[in-house]
Image 1 (cartoon, helix red, strand yellow):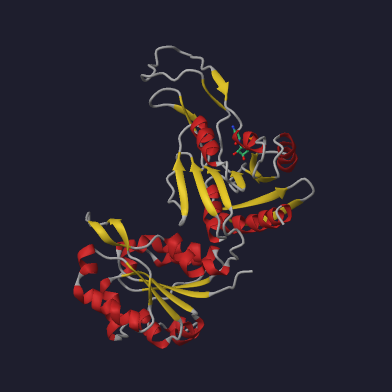
Image 2 (cartoon, rainbow, N blue to C red):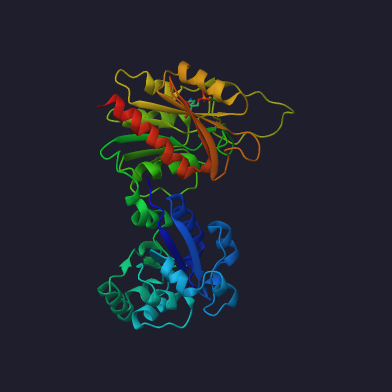
Length: 399
Ligand code: C5P
């Protein structure tokens, strides 16, 4: 369904280059075939090896590289690219582009290519505001170059203002989001993600292992499908995907309350969060001192959020996740029946290949009548396939 767009990512020498591998990954997640070109100064900030590992192809660095010319030379690379994205693009690089310089591989490629050119600037806010930079940008815009960003906020130099590189997720969505059918336009999705934290005292607590990556990838993909998303997240340090409304919660009870505050108008509920099944009966106001050799902690069961949503009088389409370490599909199917939900996604969390902290996973989607395995791939790509299944069932239920 998605076109394999041939995208050349050009990286120039700015601190925001640390975001470039993430951009490459997110473009690939959206089905792009990516090659990377780095300027000499970009290599001061990040290594070509990192980009080679992420893109799966050698990184091009030099204009006159005998080895590269015998493989994919600079003219072939210029012809190969359907889109050239310079991210980050420094003020110096923008100036070079505006004056038509061709003194390294990237500037030469840009001059030699008919591809669509996209620039994601990143620089100190004064450099951005400087009339010379703005004039150079005007020149590029007049020539048809697309500019994404920069964003506003804290800068590496300690200043605050316009100049941050736009987040990779936002760039990828803007460039390749069109390849995804907007089949969830107007559909309201509530999603839970991450772990919950059940406090024992001000410094200790009970939690479940969950990076939040699967839930955030699903929110990102659902946003690409055009859905209106409320992402209710436990404590994780992940960027909020573009176009997603995020509500941060800590405990399972907070998550329960937030879900029920927003579920009334929801069409689809997806419970990806690893919710603590129990919480301490008492939360100590002060840090508990370690005076005893042993201690007992009395726990009480938390409500099952997913089940409570499925039990609503007019429930949304409900999807659960089953993180299992053995008899994965059998256990998942039992949960599908017991929780009376429409769909459960079984995933293996045992071993190094397991779901925890990984960017990739392998899942099986179970409904009452079907079991659909999806082979190992990135959590974003899994999300796209999972959403396609949800859309087909959703459309079937809501003709
Ligand atoms: O029963 P189990 O915890 O294995 O089920 C996992 C599914 O149930 C996940 O979708 C999880 O988000 C959801 N769940 C919940 N509330 C709980 C426990 C699990 O919503 N208290």
